[in-house]
Length: 108
Image (cartoon, rainbow, N blue to C red; front, side, top):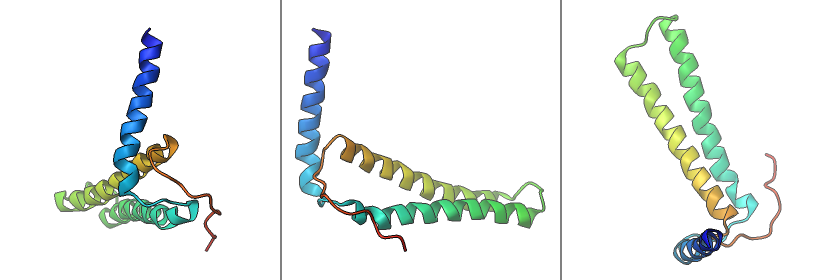
């Protein structure tokens, strides 16, 4: 009985999520995700570079509050983009939206 209820719960959750999400988002192909993945990579690079620059600027000493706030802001941007990208991945995996059959993005 419990397993049947869980199976039915998953079916209803998928149906509701698809009804809500699918009309709001465009049908995507793998190639359409390249700008998104590049954006996340740039945010990651910016965050890591800021850390390394901070270590260089402080010569290993503790950073100022302002310096830490700047680093935190970069982390917040990076983490938010990762969280959103993971949410999109879940939407795709659970088939809450339509996806196009398509080619891999071109390396550039």
